[in-house]
Length: 241
Ligand SMILES: C[S@@+](CC[C@H](N)C(=O)[O-])C[C@H]1O[C@@H](n2cnc3c(N)ncnc32)[C@H](O)[C@@H]1O
Figure 1 (cartoon, rainbow, N blue to C red):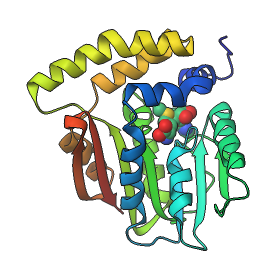
Figure 2 (cartoon, rainbow, N blue to C red; figure 1 turned 180 degrees about the vertical axis):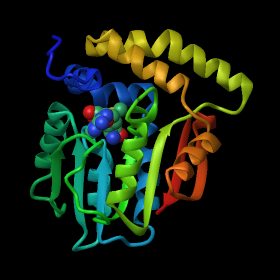
Figure 3 (cartoon, helix red, strand yellow; figure 1 turned 135 degrees about the vertical axis):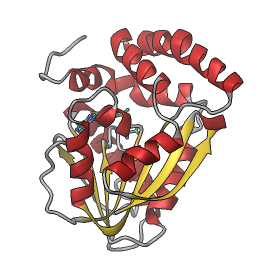
Figure 4 (spheres, rainbow, N blue to C red; figure 1 turned 60 degrees about the vertical axis):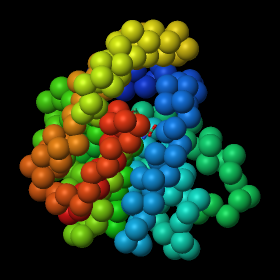
């Protein structure tokens, strides 16, 4: 089922797992991911931006939730380098045709080089995507600079991501779960063990809220808040340009 489509291994992973991506997300988060995204959307819309960019939009769950809560006139975009994930997002958008949902512009491309003017978006969100951009990634600095460049001054940058739990006992359970369960079950459902090994490994080794804050501050963002969710396995971090 492997489709060698690019010279970027991550792009190939997502080309393989997109049909089952949403299902695996629901199972592995015990359905909690929906409520975390809602929280992230609320934080993103708090200052009533005129436009929202969802970076690494994947199958579009974050920006679709923004659309559900959007005030008239809000311009919405989703950006990702996996055409397969984007097609899933477009399919979900079409399912909602006939409802009052505002249009979403789903665009394909690399975060390292985004086709947007400086200061284009009033707010920006990234859910379970920043790990891909900075963890063991030689383009991390470039990715962060691009994220800052396209956000308007004063605009909010909302990050929802896996996190390393502070509590030792929970960290041990979390590690066992990410090492022994997630890769194999995810691999079984999606047919791509390698992709879920990478996703589990990057989740396991990912940052605490204060490490994430340090990365964002280092890239020139100002921290607004960091909130720990699911006993610290997930973080919601809000920064500002
Ligand atoms: C774990 S998925 C998250 C999808 C979605 N945001 C969610 O909440 O479920 C990460 C997404 O990041 C995208 N991605 C990773 N690196 C990227 C890059 N350099 N440029 C654009 N998209 C990228 C992948 O294609 C994938 O769809």
